[in-house]
Each structure stands twice: as C-alpha cells, then as structure tokens.
Image 1 (cartoon, one colour):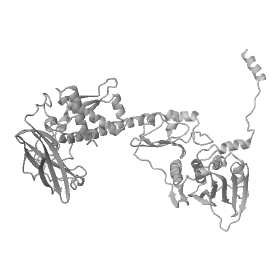
Image 2 (cartoon, one colour; image 1 turned 30 degrees about the vertical axis):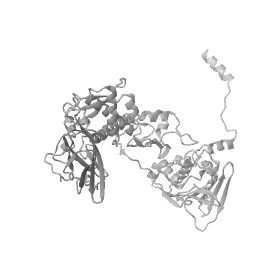
Image 3 (cartoon, one colour; image 1 turned 90 degrees about the vertical axis):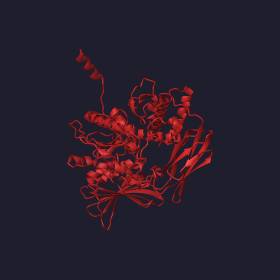
Image 4 (cartoon, rainbow, N blue to C red; image 1 turned 180 degrees about the vertical axis):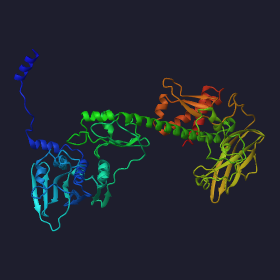
Length: 613
C-alpha cells in the first residue's frame, strides 16, 4: 500500500531546476550587497596580495574637482590568455566563477578569493572602475566598468616603459565618501588584514594627497598578557588558530573572528553562540582564525550556520572553560587590589578628618594620642584588609609605628619620597576644646603639592588673632596654648615661610569651664583604624557591621546598594567611606540618641569625603 501511494504521488508531481530570469538584476543585487566601502578597499588589497605583490600603494587624491582612489601593486597581475594579454574578458564574463578557483584547483596556495564578485564591490566606492595591466608584448591593457551599467570596455595602450603589477582606479568617489581619509583606510586595513599582512610580508602604504599625509599599514598589535596552552578540540576540517591576550577590562576589548588571516567579524560576540562569558567579559583581546568556515558570499561579513560552524563551536568548549578560570582569577586579584586601594584612601581621609575635628570628641583611635620621637612618615600606611587576626596588629599601628625600631630620620629613601617645596600647612588639631586654666599642645603639619611632609628650611610664627589665652614658644614646629581663666572662643593662627613661599592656617579653640565626659564604652582599648572585608548576603537588609574584636567592618557585598555602587569606582569608594563613618559613629557614641547620631555622621562624612581621593 505504501509503495502504491508513493508511485501515485510521483506520477502527480512535477520537478524542475532553479534559474535566474534576469542575469543583470542578479549582478546588480550582488554588486550592491557590500555595505562597507572600506571592506571593498580591503577586497582590492587582497586581490593584490593574492597576486603575490610585495609592495602595495593606496593613493587618495583629487583630479578635476573629484576624489579618486588608486591601488597599485607590483604583483603578477591579471592571468594572461593564450595571446599573452591580461584575460580581462574572462574576469568580466565569469561573475560568481572566480579565476582564483581555477588556480586553487591547479594547486595554488595562499589565495583568499573564491566567489568572483570582489571587483563588483566598487559600486559602493565610486562610479567607474579602471584596471590596467601590462601584457607580454609590453603594451598596457585597460578594462573599464561603470556603476549601474552591464557594459565593460577593453583598451590597449602602448607605453615606453612597461610596469609590473596592476593599477586599479576608482573615479569619481561617491559623494558620501569624502570623509574616507587615508588614516581611516590605514586603521581599517591594520585590523581587517592583520594576519594576511603578517603572513605574506607585504608592505602597504596609504598616500593621502588631499591632506598631504602618508601612512604605513602596520598589523594591529594587541595589549595585555598573551595566553598560552589554549588547546581547542581537534577537528577533521582543519586547525583553529588562537591568539588571545588577557587585558584590563574594558568595552574596547574584543576578540575578532578571522578566516585565513582576513577578518570576518570585528567581535566574535556578534554570533549568538558566543554572546556569553568569557567572550563578553571584556578581558580578552585577540583573534580566532577558523580557515574552514563558510562565509556569506555577498558581503563576506557573516557566517553560514552549517555543520562546519557547529563543529567550530564544539571545538572551542575546552578553551572557553580555561578562559573562564583565568578571568575569575584575574577578577579576584583585581578585587583584592581594589580593596587595598580603597582601604588606604578611606583611612587616609579619616585621618585627615580627625586632624580637623575636636580631638576630645573624636580621639577614638591610637592615631593622635601616641607619642613618638620620630616624625610622621606619610608613605607608610596600613595596607591590609583586616580579615585575619594576624593582620590586625599591623593595622593598629600609627604611621610612625611602621618605621623600623631605632630608624633614623635620614634613612635612605627613594627619590620620589623626598618632599618638594612648601605648598600648604595644617594646624593639628584643627578644632579642640580646652578647660579654663589648662593647656594644650598644637603642632604644624607642612606639606608639598603631592602631600609629602616638609621639614626643611621652615620658619614658624604662631599667634592668637582673636579671643584670650597665651602661647609658649611661638616660633617652633609645635606650640603650647595656655587657656584663660574664663570661657571663650579663641582663634589660633599659624604662618609658615620657606624662602619666598608663605602659608597660613587657623584653628578654633573652645575654652570651657568643664569638659563633656566621653560616652561610656566609646573606644575601650584604643586600636588603629579598622579594615574591612566582604560577606555576601543578598537577601538581607543590613549593609555593614562592625566586628570589634577583629577591628574589621564587614560589608554586605550582596546588598542592592553595594551592587549599584560597584558599577562606578568613585561611587563605590564613597559608599564604603560612608559605611565606615556609620559604623564608627555607632560604635563610639553608643549613648547618643538617633538624631544626635545622625548629626555626628553628617559631620564626620563632611570632613572625610572632602579628602577622599
């Protein structure tokens, strides 16, 4: 029964073959399918490379008020016919049947073209195409083709000195291509034909006569660390060539897809199967060259999703796994490095804030009260995140405490550690409270433009510009203020000179009849500024917590605020700084009401973020 049904269907069906009804319409569609004029220029250059040229010169100029583009090479030229003349007629009458396919069948290697439509792409560049080549008789033969015309013209010219190679000229260029400068052509070819140029050793020069510039096409060089031991699965179709570099993350990092040295896609992520990490992570530069892929013939800027493409995708699976591991390691290293930098910046900003805030209210940490015979070194800071107890001792030290025991002031330093000329001066503490009849010591912190502490050739002058009180020894680096017997507000002024440079600063002293008791539990054992670490808790509302025993602020890096802040480095830095201010205020003012805590937090944030760089 089944066999009878098949025979009945066969008798009732008809068969036929597809054919082109209008050949000129088909040629017009093919010629207009190339949307990128720079890609068309690359096609012309590839023809020269296929002709084994050693030197290619691309000239952009202007004649009779119109722009033109000329590609000259010293290659073997157009293959000759039996009469020894360039076989232009075969080229013009065998569209979609490239002469290069015949050469490949004869064993020629290193030839890229195969569709026989490269010359037609001149439609996207200009109106007329002229190709000139010498024959065996020493005469010059020319073929001229015109945009939107099915006709071609052959011409023979006699010359005194025959030239080697081929001259291709497109004239005049389309009106919209006036911005296609020599520099743009150079940059495009450096990426588009990167490996073809390297493999063939051809020298390409772009001469822009309109701007009087000359550019040498140098194959694009990638930045970053070259990755080794990336082995794709072996295939029966051919070998896949990988040249990938691990670079700092950025949107400009792309991995191009090439075929036999010619770029097909500027980014492999344009293909659906590769719109995932590691390709979209932004860490990779380089090329993936797959010689056996089938291209879309019209544009040569796309891949046919056939069995060869599927074979290619499967072969890259082990490479993707290896790349993902490398990127994850890079991310962890970057996060650790970024965390160290953030910690240093936050702690530096807090120290600057404490120099300007009343010491009696904000003297929580052992950074102001510790005495030392050594001068402050601004280069030695706590630099570890306090995630482990063994690191806390290092964090609790003051800047002076990081110096080696017994180290002298003239310890050998690097050149950049020596301070420059005087640029600013700061009185520490900037704001303070002193009880009546008592005394307090103030010191000058002099810095250069880069923030390094200046000690040499300084002349100090302390004075009280308003209010009451007395000073002891007003011409040294530090001064002792003796408070009057009645409450008042006193302004302490300092002038420091170094040669012709003079800097001034003022401090406000509040003289009161009694000091406010420091809140109970505000400080306990005095430690250094805390570090911080991360704990991922995406479903919980807390943003940070202060682990007092470890002297570490634990930050919830799964909170939506942290995720939002992490998208921008400066925003992340400010966010972590505010978490520090929040936790320090809560810990050191436990007895205050909520509104008073908020006032303190605003105060500390204001002075801290001013120095957050």
